[in-house]
Length: 226
Image (cartoon, rainbow, N blue to C red):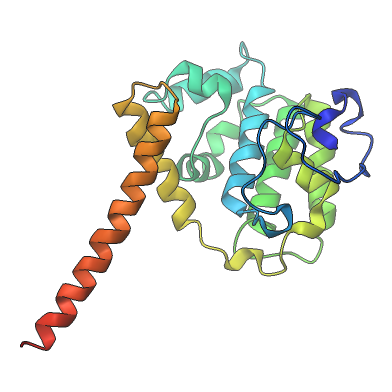
């Protein structure tokens, strides 16, 4: 029920009534879910992208930190930077950039350092014993910075138990591939999101699976000639 409530309670209330049924048109439900909610996996890469997005959107667009992002990534359009749209490699590049830290105000620096701690000690290959404290610190600094609570931040705030114990064992390769493929689709459709673009993307995945399976069978036949 979290998504149907006022934003003013997002950072205050943690326990929300569980939705008992998905009725189209009620409580912001547009379509019946294809997958049972309990079967949904939370990929660490997408949580990382969501945290980065909220951090950038909360920055002062006239401040040095936001201006530095435009200089750091000249190939990214200003609209995407304003929307906080970054991929995994770009985030890792910023995490290693010490000059980026000098461009931040105190609240921005606290939020960024908390984000880095969660990335390396919870969303990465290592899950620290004090990860709950690190996430709590992140949420406090994000709220102080003025970040909105997106659904990905909401999971850290209210549903931390959803994350598996072996979170670091999950690979980012598939998530990164998805974002790279979507970039290609965006160029092809000139940034216009529609059902045709998503259908094209799904068919590209189906073709890849078919080509891989066909190549495997051809290779197997070559070892056993008729």
